[in-house]
Image (cartoon, rainbow, N blue to C red):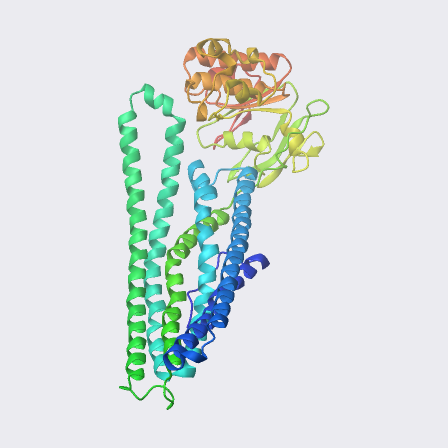
Length: 544
């Protein structure tokens, strides 16, 4: 009897997992021995009760039961520990790669990745602890029981042989639908997680504009879609169980009919010419349900396999995404010595060719050009967050590579176009535990408007701050630690004139103190106040 194929995306089980799967087979193998003891005792009571050693039979049955229970407990413990190790390894792989990637995953947003690393990977646990042992039992036990039945009666063996293979065939047909339904359910879980992260991040702003009603309606619709997907998976699981129980009941009933009429003397065929004894008949009746039990276990774990296949397909899609690795190890290393001269030579990245550029300590450079010209990408290349496809960036005489990236980033203050915050205090969001000096970023007005000043708790993505206030906090974070170079990506975009002027003044004050400033901007007023302008785009002319 063939068993369903395993997902090719999960590596072969390690030694502890293989040991647990084999241990899970032993309890099933002890049942024919227990059935033989029961049949011998009952058959003896029907023919010659005086010859039945009741105490010895009871002791043998209890010893086999204790062995069976001990093997089951040990197998579950070993399989649970192996599943923990496998899930932890996959989760560590996801977290490590995401932490070291230079760009965001196209697989999904933060919510989808969190759902994959958390909730979805847990769907592998029942697959590892239930489906794989059930699969081995379904491969071994029906053959063992079929051989024992054939020894006593070819008729019973024929009944089992005809009823058994129909179950995997129908399970495979149902399994195709179950896999598709599980994949749709996993996609819906990731979409709902993304929606939850986005809405929670902007919860304060949504409440201020009175968008609570549409927000609740959107969540209700998304949760209803997820409920429909989950019900579809359960519907298919119930269908597979119904098919299994139908064929199991028919097979057991036919065996019971044959054994009963044979013991009554109404049938004289099917037992190799010898008379069927009561003990043999009872033994066959006890074996018949156990012939189908491994298939029942496999059917019960079938939707676990479908869910695991969907998760593993998602993991493989995530693995297959081309992701640029961030230079360095991401470890904060203290800078030493003066800021080196920065040179860009022959840079080409994502089809954009950049002009030759040299930035000396104390320079202020505006990177200008239309949207899509590569301004933000150039800042990421300078920061060592991405590796150029062509060309080289040198720091003095040394190239910017994995060996120098961590020290280089220790000299840089980074002001991204989209501010990111933690659900911690304002103080922590600026200094991450170090003492802060908010005066340099002109945060006085921001602190006065907050209820607890630097100790005010922020929500995800700066919920509780206006756009201009969030940009000022980001500038304060960039200036934290007295960097030698600040890379600012559209620092005045979408700000009112007063806030943009405050941001500009803070950046120029940093430059007047001897800092180096590189700004990607569409703001002509800001670019005009810097010493140099580098234009990107089809008509790029380099320094202006």
